[in-house]
Length: 314
Length: 297
Image (cartoon, rainbow over all chains, first blue to last red; front, top):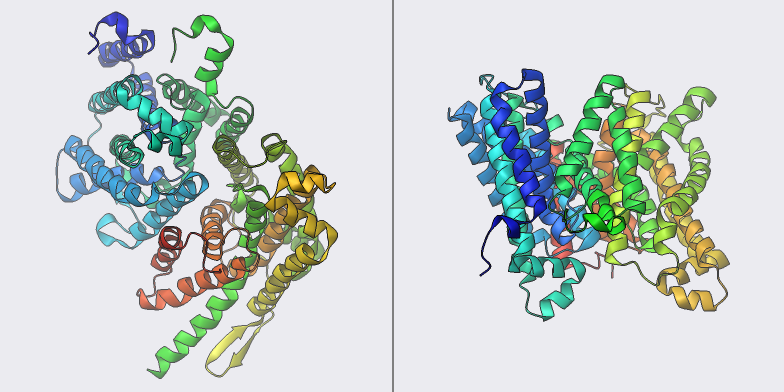
């Protein structure tokens, strides 16, 4: 057992923790405009880390991650609207339902590799949308409007805690024994199995964690939006944004999802004021260019070409 | 009871007619999948572009969807070759098979492409547009048969037959089939793999965009850029898997199956097209689990 000290944690984790720490310390004093921006940035980052667990670490591309985000939102809406729970309990409910769903779906679809998994994930999201449309308890096609208060500080700390746990788990996975197994799945799954890696179990655990946090982030997103509407909640755009963030930042890295979230969220906010709808065109072009020419994303590319940074970022 | 039989027969006919169109849009994907062993995630967006092609030909030239098929197909051929050189050439060049890393690259990059196309389309064409073309319907016993759907179904099957003839009876077609089976052996036979792959992918896009033109008949609410890709791309994937990737007539079998599940299935699901569509796309999972090679042997 390695002794844990600040030095062994590595500069990347310390940097992220310092960043989160500063945000937590000054959240109460931020102007509301900035606080809203930060909350949304953290939600995006939480979504990016959630998809990073499965797509980034194992290389299984999930096009249907919006499903878990939407389920988290519906869990919150049901908990708050129908059961009259506190929104934080609603977020927890959404996250747990997402986790259960991810276990169920993953047990089947993780058997398929590459293209087939990607298609199966997209298909489950599409089916989820059509099923929700028919469930009257979840508002059917109309969606659910929630009567919750405007509590930016509560939103902030909820998503802050979620993100901090995600970063911790990502660090633990990439630095622990588990990480070797998972990286071997990404490199060559068959070879990994022959040397005794429990590929199926590892993938399922990662997919479940991924679903849990996508659901939690979705819950906070719709808590903040005080309502959920099926057409937007199941929009494939969210799946793409999540994927875009880790592609741009660097798949499977500790810092990549955060970089990607900042890049995607800030550019989307900037272009929103310039030309509506155009932000996704820019993000799309960015994804195409990065996927084709810099498949390691920002973090991987920096590590490759700037040797001084190799010890600093991961 | 007689009512139910009439309803059932009507949905059966509509399901088969719809299935033919779904088959042809999936057929484009099937060809691309067969040739390059990769999936074009932006497939739905090219269906949409094909539909818009038919719309503009109708708007400015008075063409009906059937007449716009050859023009759309020609555009698709050019677009497809451009797509090959832009997205696949670097990944396929000099390789004997597609690795997992390349697969990931094409999945993600074509997903980015779909986002670009769909958002540009949304900002240019804000409102759904439709083509006014209704050649009437015939009453066969209790079943109304819309001529529009019938013509489109015939053209769809003809397109699939045409691609099959091209691939089995011409030199270039045989070269494409050889390429899909064994790239190094194809090269030893003096065939240029780049040309063959570019033509194959171009053909896939040409069928896809022609299918988009044909699909307009089945879009009563018009061409809506936000909805086409999101629905018809997954349906095409499912159809290809049902029929078996790379099997030319598999598309038709898969398309008819999905058309029937949606149209006849909704009768048994309380008339809900939404639930029937959910069931139709979810058939993917049992098929992948139990018959990964598709329905056809």
